[in-house]
Image (cartoon, rainbow, N blue to C red):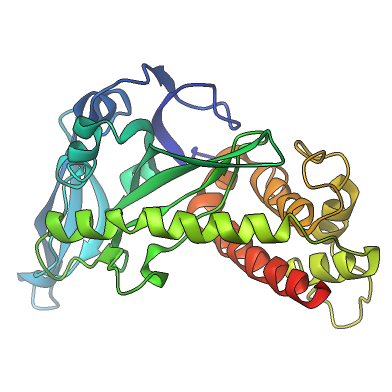
Length: 314
């Protein structure tokens, strides 16, 4: 089976998934594009169909292809008015912040044969719980080269002690636009404005983390919590799902379990730990799910539920 992670580069410590090419932490935006293997372009080309009368006609749709190493790889089928966004164009979003020293490039790569391109940049922003439990703020930019997907940016806090991640959609803050469709040309200024809102979203997460780390759970309620986050879909099965059971098993042994012991912060991080490190055996499938798929949605649900349980326990 081909790897979902096609190419990748990272700065700092080796990522938990162990994939990618190591680069300097002061690497430029262009340098990251090159080292991550993202310095290629996409374009639309006509599609043709063979008709019953033996003629060949141009299709109303077009093929989106990648130009790389002298070859053309088909990525998707798009409409004629679909506007491609080049990787170089999307990554310009990071440029003014890198120049100002407010963030540095951290990770970038390509998934699914170039259909998903991402860049992760570390902001000079963090919070600390219980003296040593540090969470850093990152910005995740996603530039998809496939029909139906949108260019978007969101805040992605990462807990240092265990590298657990949480993707926060910044379009939940005020009226910030965190995404753009391909129905119009890429608007860099609009995305930069949305990117500025990530600081406010991170503050909201910090407040939630502070709150749930101060409220303790009971065994009964924490089991109920895990069952809601990882429900069993069997109509006849009454016991907890395997992932819910794993959460309860690692509650006291997960990395960072000594911080906020017996609190909803500890319970929430059991979910993020299982989601990021144990939910899928295949590493690159786990990465895809963690940042872009079901695991990302599940962790947002887990945070919301942890806050609700903590509020009830007051």
